Image (tube, rainbow, N blue to C red; front, side, top):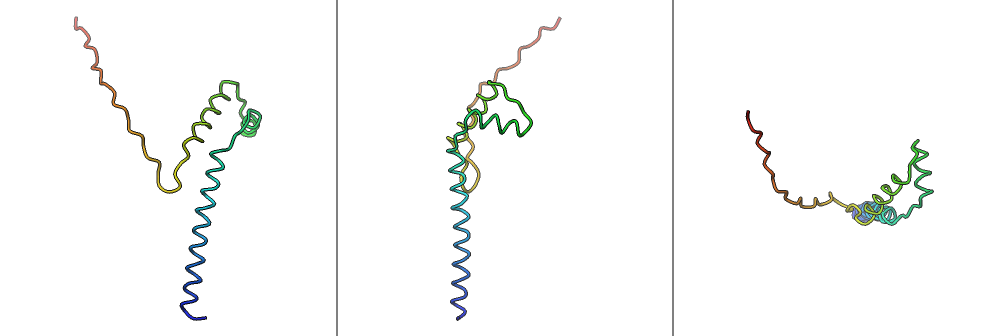
Length: 98
């Protein structure tokens, strides 16, 4: 084999490995975002971690999972921060001096 053939082989392997890693990460993130867990699955996972969840905690966890699934993190880079809403500054009330 010539040197050019070796270089093309190495470049092709590197591109294939990098592309495969990115494809795998994308598929795992997509499947995790669409994963639907029932109450029994969540309570079983919590018991493995040594926690007992009451019904209110179960609702909160399910809401958080739904919210996270609707907005999965990007494949590259950081998530863009949402612009903060401006709040009106309320000056503190002056105390009357006696």
